[in-house]
Image (cartoon, rainbow, N blue to C red):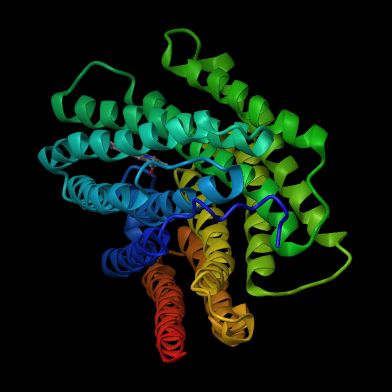
Length: 431
Ligand code: HEM
């Protein structure tokens, strides 16, 4: 494996796994919610169902998986010493789960009291996570753009949650704030400053390692994160009086930057010497293609006021961003991380190498590709349902089924890990 990975400080395996196993459940809930509510829910970005679906995926699926991945990635890849990861996971995960369910219920049933109850839980849960992870990211002696990008992503998460909290209070108490502009800024930091920043930082590291590509161009990694931050700041100026028209101009360069990252990743995949077509590589290709379609659609909406006036345009972008880009990237990543961690932890039990099963035996390749195909079908159906509402229920069911299958594949891997672990321990006690 990678020469600079360090496993001395790796957290117990239960830390990432408990987050990874929770994430697909929220995807299932999102699919069922769509199947239950039908096509009307996708009529605009402001329907209660749209807002609830958004946060089931943003906070249930994405935040859970990304917190689990970070608690594992920081010690192993950038040598950061996370303070008592098991305690952090045991305390913060329930807080985040409860907060997510409260916020989703508040948005869905139009009960501002429930959303308000979620705010202190988020401030505590995400606040605690941000402080602990920041300490480890600032104390590590490591350097490089992955580290820089991870630090920026944590800042993006903090800002997103603060803006979300402000939005909840503004809506609950009728504060005089520009809600639409504030929501635009909140979602840009959530999707760009947090999720995309983290994806980029992690992929500088894991794409060459797991997909056997050349490294990202150094010039690209030096510019991508800082430029993304600058453009997000320019976009955020729309909350200031009189700044709205010019700040929205930042949308086009932002979309160009997003497509540069997608193009660069596709190019790296295309030019690698050994062509591997495992589920992770294909999931990444799906992610990057959706990112390109997102950028082209976003630019069309910005440049053509007629198309931009259709409320379904924003929903189309939302489906691409959540189901097409981030659920795909995270699923692909989990299919690599889970077998790898299982193999690693088994190996560390001190068994002879021959007793440790190969990574390919943790999740069957057919199960991963089958799930991937169902996910792609679900994304296509979801995108079609934006324009053909009659398809929404079917799309919701397919999405729920593909997330359930993802969860099942991960669960099988965890159970295999436990079975192999017990075998190795039993063999050791007989020696
Ligand atoms: C951290 C990841 C998050 C992401 C990626 C995210 C993303 C989004 C997106 C995309 C929207 C716009 C939805 C639409 O246009 O249909 C939105 C709206 C909203 N978000 Fe979040 N969000 C996050 C966290 C939060 C948190 C933690 C809270 C509350 C504490 C929150 C509260 C809200 C509220 C209240 C709205 C709707 C405002 C309205 O109805 O005008 N968000 N969010």
